[in-house]
Image (cartoon, rainbow over all chains, first blue to last red):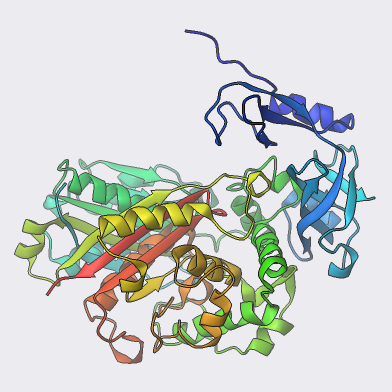
Length: 127
Length: 386
């Protein structure tokens, strides 16, 4: 039996993000991209999976301001925003934006840029 | 496939329990056994739903429950599908009986979180997200549902008042439910003024952390007839999933797993959503109730808020939703919740609720249970036979 091909480990994805490179898994057949590990494409079931570099800028698609609670490692960062960012190529990614306390500070459509950090793989700042 | 009936149900009240996990699970199970009248030796096994046993340093709960029930030789496995654990366990019990591997099975769900502080509990809940891509980006569970709420507001113009009305309705229903956690009448104004947790969701948009246990026993038609209780048939079950992490989805205003599971359950029950008399849906947050109503087809996308506003989902409305008070006010003991919904459907269909909360003339109910943000979805349709 052929060995299962691992295109990229989650650890590699994390390390690359710290160096400022956002990368996703991508289907070589239909082009579907995913920021979570993909071995078989959920869209066309292709196993031709590769890696794709993602743009580092995009806009806020949806967000929440975490005002009261957060996973323990981020409690000291409250208030901050957890967001879904639509990158310039259309790929959706999670995005943490620090130092945001009011909804008006981060309306849907706000332009953001990836900010390499040890804090979180997907830390963004307002562009 | 054999016809399967719910022959007995049981539940602790939801809220803060002094009992241990085991004691609560056994209490609900004993109630189900006694309400059914079944000889305990006739129970072939159990599925025990539990998601946060680590809060009490207790895993492998099944054998503890079976030992206390006097049937230690019978198998019991733990089912974990986050907040959908309860109905997932119910479905596995159903599958065993329908498939002919067993004649009677127990499904019991239990959770106890009152022994841990809310920060720890928030952390445990977040472990059910796709952690590296959600929790490790700062998302709490309220945060994930708040993100869905924001997307829904943007796409459909849903307002904070629309969300608040869901909370008000569920609190009104819970006032009449003796097993409910939050028994407090609230107004739209109260919800809007409550502390913001994860904008736009506030404290009163969220369900409470509850302790509790609920159980159901399913059995063959032959056993159900012999026991002589109400004939409540499991008409259909559905079980599906959705892409785990929110950002990997194409639509942030719907939980696709709900649509898939509903289609399965309705097809098996040979019915349509129009013919469902009442529903219990997974309203861990107010937005979740609106999204569930839309995904189930009770209202068109973006129209569930108006359905609630017009009183159509109220107890006296055309399609009562969460007459129990829902997760929002009845309470949400994570893995017990799905079985609590089964308890509610059974009790309504059997006419055992009584009083003002008893729905009149109902023959068919649907229960909808969600794990995380739809990563797991389980649906069951129960029907009363005459």
